[in-house]
Each structure stands twice: as C-alpha cells, then as structure tokens.
Length: 458
Ligand code: ARG
Image (cartoon, rainbow, N blue to C red; front, side, top):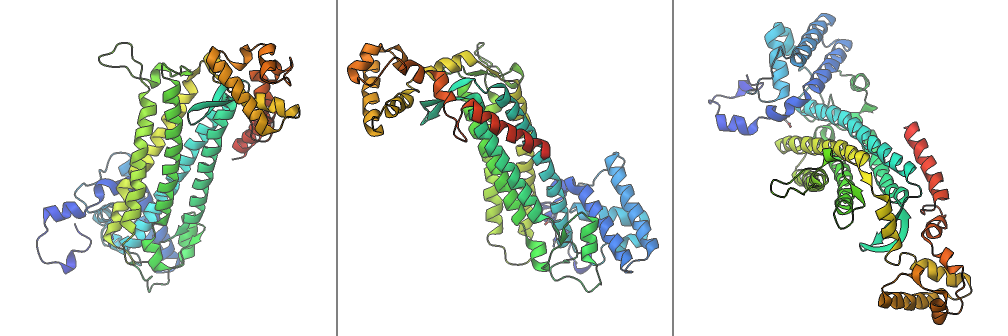
C-alpha cells in the first residue's frame, strides 16, 4: 500500500517502484522509526491534538510491532516502499482507523531526518567504544614495552632509535584525536528535526522541545528547511571514519612490513593470518591487508555523500535517500576493521631481540655521536661533518660506529675519548631523550600515566 496513492491514477510500474524504494536498506532503523513515532504521539497527546486514549492505542500498537519484529513474529515486507510506510501500514492494519492519526503534524521528510540521526547517534557510541578498546590494547603494549628498543624511521630509512612504547604512542595520539572528533560530531548533531514537517513546519501546536527531550536531544532544530535537508553530520562522520581508517591503514602497512621475512619484527597470531593454496610455507597478513584495502570503501562514502549533497536545492530532495547505503556500509566497515585490528595487535608477538639488533644497525646513533662533539665544544655543523666522515669510514670497512677503536675515532677528531662508547650506546641514545614527547622511558612513563587517566575518566 502506498501512503500517497490518492493523487495517482495510473498503474504502478514495477521498475519505478523498485528504483524508488528504500526498504531494503532503511529497514535497519525500524527501532529508531518506532521510537520516534512513540515520542511524536506522546507529544501530540500532551498538546491535546490526540486524546490520551488514541495515544495509548497507537503506542501499544507500535510497541507490539517492535516486539514482533524483534521476536521474528513479524517480518518486514520487502515490497513496502520504505520503513516508515511499513510501520504505519502495519499499525493501521492492526489497530484500524486510529492508526491513521499517527502521521498528524509530521512528514516523512522530518521523520527520516530523525531516524537517521537516532541511528547514527547510536552508532557513534559504538564506534567510540571500539576506538576506546583499541586505545586500551595499544596502551597495554606501551606499558609492557617502555624499554623495548626498535629503530625509528624517516623515509623508511633507519633514523634514530626509539621504543615500542614510543612508536605505539604515536598511534595512541591518532586514535585519541579520532575519539574527540566523534565526540564533537555527536554534540553538534544532537538536535531534533521532528516537527519540521515537509519543510515549513506545521499548523498544529506542536511542542518540539518536548519531543526533543523525549528522544534525548539537547534541543529542537531552529530552521525547518535546514532540519529536513541537513546531512552535514553524515559528512562529518564519514570524514571522521575515513580518518580512523587512514590511521588503521598506516598501522596495517607497518605491521605488514614488520611481519615480513625481511623485517621479522613481529609475528601475527595464526588466528589473524591465512595460508596460501599453492605455497605451503606462507602465512599471510590478510587481516591487515584487508583493513588497508577497505579504507578505500570508507573514503568512497565520504566522496559519495559530498558529491550527492553538492547540487541539492532546498529543501528535501530524493537524492538524499542515497545517504543511507554508503553511510551504513562505511559504519559497518569501520566497526568491523576496528574490532579485528584490536584483536590482531593484542595477539601479535614482538621479536624484541630482532628489533633491538635492527635498532643498533644502520647508524641510528650518528646524531648522538654528533651531540657528543657538541657537548665537547664543537659547533653542531662541524660535528655533523665529522660524524659524516666517521660513517663513510665505517661503511668502507663494513662496521658500525660502536665497532671503531678509539684510535680510529681520534684519527678523525682528537676530541673523542673513551666515554664515546657509552654516549652512543642504544640505551643512552634512548634514555637521554627525556624532553616531553620523546622516547626516554622516564618521560614516556609520565605520558603513559596521563593516558591511563584519560581512559579511566572517559
Ligand atoms: N526513503 C526516503 C529517504 O530515505 C524517506 C523520505 C521520503 N520523503 C519523500 N518526500 N519522498 O529519504
């Protein structure tokens, strides 16, 4: 049954119906649709637009539809146009004429704007929880690896030694920002569009603030045209999810490298790896690769919704129906990736000895050798040149700075003394970096304490 059949005379066209319908995807917010309707009729009764008796009948009918769908006693009709039509038609079917009063002072335009907001608001909560669980997993690894050395890279070339705690701390910061973005979006979007009608409000004496409060919104929206055509919060959410995925993808890329035979920094648990159908020796990091790959889908959702919205005149236009599938897919994808990624890093083993060996190799202590000279009165630029010559000498002999004899050091600069070996040891290189944000364990410990506090408070 169509909600709008009255004005039409011609037969329906199946292709058109199929093209126009949204039931296949908007049925996922049947709970939100029913919740919104219950709030709406509650307000209508308070305003004496409906009687208390009518309200009671409608609310009871709606609650029964909800529990019947939940219990599998009522299946959502795939031939319905959308979830709004399905719920209303079922209600009328079950409780008769009084059900026809449900849609008083409401349009599907403000109804769908509400449903989507309610749905997305719940999903933001779930996304936030998943990011928090990932942060907890990262923090645990940090706590356990304050002094586990590894090379830090720039240009994917070994640069200076760091620790696992420090490297993972960088990701902690990224996902922390992701949480704060989700928090901001939730706060900004939390206004109730119901009562905006099709675009220009209604002539009924609705109490919009009352409906808003019933649905846990901070307040009602202030402009009815904007209320039915605002999809900014979906764009913001798609952008926040794209950023989460970008972070997960970078992290995945590193794990794929670290898990390779060339690096051997980590080993993924069997449960998070797959084999090859032809090469028996293989254990592939498919989960990390899929997370990296699925990032494209979420970027796609952002581009898609931005593009859909860019040419739409005020107020509601059917183009907006296209917001759902892509946002739902982006939410499902991001949630799935977050959960799996947390499991993957929580079960991953670190080959700490290999990481440490790698941190020693590749002249990661060259900067510290130059700093040693600076501490002995040599200007930094000259010190840089001297150490450059040391490196050249080592490369020629196939040794590292730690392997050079004091005589060899002195031949290049007489300033070097025996204490150079301690000054460029891996431990010194890391321990001495104690400015805020650096890998030195003493300062890292302070930072970890602040992270622990953040996660217990919120
Ligand atoms: N399925 C529609 C959507 O998702 C619901 C709103 C329909 N409104 C209308 N005027 N046809 O946008």
